[in-house]
Image (cartoon, rainbow, N blue to C red; front, side, top):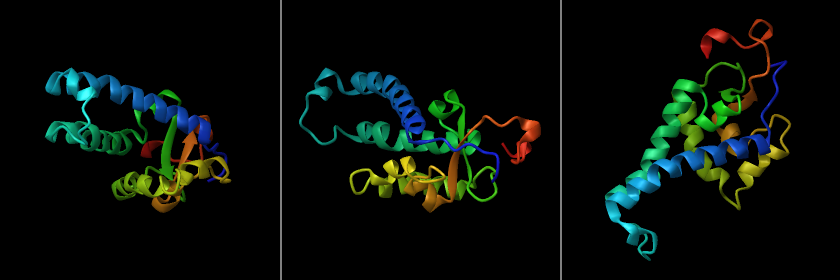
Length: 153
């Protein structure tokens, strides 16, 4: 993949922060409606089904769906970056994207090193990208000059 600009650590971190804020704006009021104000001061590990569903399953499903249909989460879209196959530059397969999500857990260990790796890697790949065979690129190349196939995005 020539003529592409990889999205680096700080840009990707900003996209992640944007996504996290969006998730919080949606989920926090719902959790408060379901469990009340005591939810926020409780020492319990989980408050029940909706706590686990809204904090873990719903965000995972939403992220994977955004990746499948848009090749990006809202934060990435706002920053004009997207996920592509590392070899072809085409849209990654659904299997790659699901694997990429679960590889986040590997990137968290030890001490989030897999995420920081994107800051030193020549293609700006985190461990989750390497495991899934993906890269995150900036959408700066004009469509007519793009080495990537625009019909695949």
